[in-house]
Image (spheres, rainbow, N blue to C red):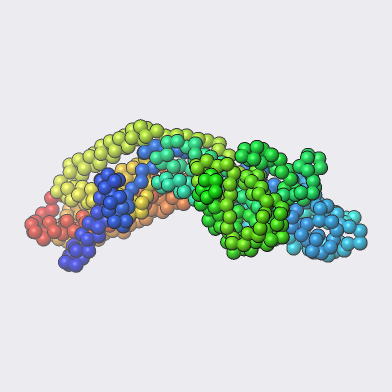
Length: 532
C-alpha cells in the first residue's frame, strides 16, 4: 500500500501539477490573459454577489399562454369544419377554455364527433399513463359540440413556455456580450436572470420585456380601419411611432412568421442612409414569401412586431430571393436591438418583471473580502489544530489540503464555473472534510501502533483500513451535493459545485498525495517509531 513505482509517482504528481496550473490564469489581469492562447484563457467567473451586477426575476404571462392555447384549438376546429364541410368555420366561438361549434343542418354528428376527437391528443411524460388527454370533447345535442382544453394540458403548455423562454432569454442576454449570465427557472412560471458585471439594466429590461413576435401579413383593403366595422378575419392594429400611430386593418392570416427567419442583421439603407434591419428566410419561409408577393403585387403588406405595425410597404414586384429589409425610423441602437430580438426568436408569451435588484461592485468587493477573511481564518485554525495534534503528520495533511484547495480552483477554472459567496463557503467546508479524512487515517495508524505493530505495517494498515470508511462518508456527502445541484438554483448550485468538486479532490489527495508523502518520508528516514 505504501509502495509507489516511478511511473505511479510521475502520474500522481503530473495530474496534481496539471490541475493546479489551470488555476494560474486567475492570478493575472484579464488583459494579460486575453493575449494567451484560447485553451489557456479559462478562468473562474465571479458571481453576482462577488462582482455586482443585475438581478431580474421574470414571470411568464400564464393567462396569455392559456388564451393562445384556446385560440389554437379554435383554429383546429375551423380547419376540421372546413375540410369536412360541416358548416361555416367562422361559427366557432370561444367560451373561457372551451370552443363551441354548432353544425349546420344536415351535417353528420357522428362524423363531426370522430373528427373532433382526433384533436384530443394523449398527454406525454408523467401524464401519459393516467390516460389524460389534451382536449375533452362533449356532444351537447342538437348539433352543438363543446371542446375544452384540459387543465393538465394547460399546465404542460405553461411548462413548455417557461422552458422556451429560458432558451430565448439566454440567447438575448448572450447577444449583449455579457460574461457568464445565470438564467434559471424559479417555481412553475418564473425565470431568474442574473448578469454579473452589468450595472445598468435598462437595455437588458428592454430586450427581455419584448415578446418580439414578428409576422408578415397582408393589409385588408376591403374596408376602412374603423371600430365596429371590422371583418371577422381581420383586426385593427396601430402603427409604430415612425408610422404616426396610424391605424391599419390587417388580415389575421399570417403569410410568414418570424419562426422562418434564419438571420437578422442591422445595417443602413443605401439610398437614404437610415438604419434598417436586413433579414433572411429559411427555404420554407422564402417559398411562402415569394408566393405571397407574386400573388399580391400592388397591395400593401404589413410587417407586424408585437401587434404593432412597423411598416406597411406596397409590393412593387415579387420578392423571390428569400431576404428583405425592415425600415421604420430606427436609431442605430434600435436597429441593433431589433436584430438581436429577431435572431434570438420570439418569446412564447409575454414576460413581466416582478423583481429587480442591482448589486453594486462595492458590495461585491466587501463580500469578497469577508469571504476571503473567513476562508483564511478557518484554514489557519485547521492548520494549527493538525500541527498541535499530529506534529509531522499534521504537516503532511496541511500540505495535502493546500494542494487540494488549489486543485478545486483549477477544476473550477477548467469548467469556467461561476464562483459565488456560497461557493467560497463550499471551499471552506471542503478544507474541514479534507482533514477529516486524514484524521481517520491517522487515528487508525495510532490504534495499530498501540496494538504493537511495526511502523511499516501500522502505516499500511492505517491507509488500507480507513479507505472504506472515508469512501462511505464522502460518497454520501457527494450524493447530497448532487441533489442540491439538481434541485437548487443560483447560489445553492454554486455551493453544490464547489462541494462536489472538493469531495473528489479530497479523496484524490488523501489517498495519493498524503500517502505519497508518508511513503517518501518513511523510505528516506527509516524511523523506528511513528511520531504521531
